[in-house]
Image 1 (cartoon, helix red, strand yellow):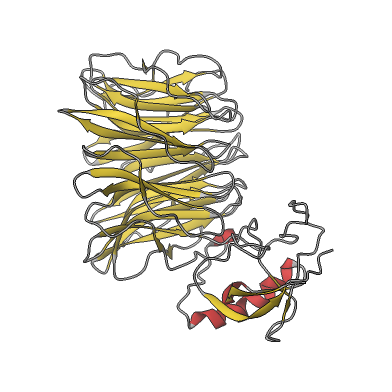
Image 2: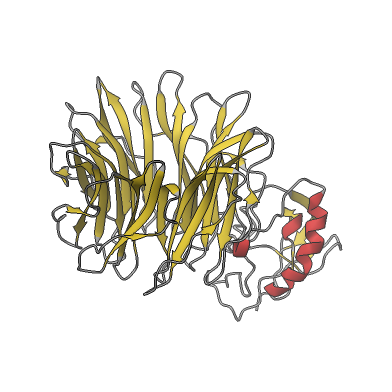
Length: 520
């Protein structure tokens, strides 16, 4: 038997009974926490956003362009553009479950400005980052990878010098192979990195001779990849797509939009069955832009477009995600002078898209929306909203088969917060990151939700979980509580049933814990 002292989050102490008792104790314990300034605002099935947000970077003048992604083990990686004092550089920080974010680490080579970082995470936890970096009068696309438990590799050039390359994007397939796309000169290019290897030679996806832009890529569960981009046909910008079946190369580019009106802002998502859905914004008249989608069945071709937005309205920046059950969710902003607000539409498997649903009030100015979907189909949307002469970040959540909840403020009041991003973890935990603008400078902040309580949430002595096991229990010698369960590191809360890994906001010393367990 050993005795050690622990810090506990007062708002998360759970009675040493089956986990459902936590729902009865949560309200009382939340009141204990209220005075300490720790927010317990609820935001859907994940539980509350764990305010206040954490500073991921230092305060500097150039912190910008954050991206966030979550590993299969729940680790969260944020990349952004910072400064080394002489140039803009790509930096990264990671938060392992139960720990705070690591110190920022520079991953791009000093000596020239780097920008536009993008990241993706492989099934084994390898992090792959692409960015663009100055090279004389032009720019190169570079990449770095970090294996699980390792460090970021030295940057490798994915494009040759001589022509400007920009707008990198990256996605990872189920086999761990990463595929990047970007613009170089007047063509869209692509290259693939096999798991544990280096990127191969770049190949052209589009025909040369016209202006191209906005490449995006997605990879399905079977390894099928679809890239979309815009290309000028001599009169208008049109959306094109190319598909790469698993184990093959990209096919010829196909036009998804007709000529006659410009189409921009393409995005792509792939369902587990291989169905690909592309979305874009198409000009339908003066100050009118429709949000449209087209679908490609497995092994087939894209069909005709469907308009999601209300005719005659002005939408922009569409995004699309697909849940594991095949439910597709589209979000975009809608302009209604003098305001903009965020809208969404959903399509169940084998169904059609619903009528647009407003996620923000049409009396506010909201934009920069981002969306992510969890393994159970829960969708989280974040955006920035201008209110009281400052920007702030809000979020909303929709459970499978439900509707979006009311908007929740997730950034602190009184500051300028913008450019939000969002990611969902394997346990359904959402993490948002954004730029915070202060008098001293800019910093990157991040915040996560706390998933809902579940019965049998602690691992057994073999490290596995079982819903029919009672959670591990410990006696609290102070007498304030009896049978307190130490939350599990692997539990969605992100804490630990073991004697270590106790980090976070709102911890309070309540007493000494007797570590003799009563585990079944």
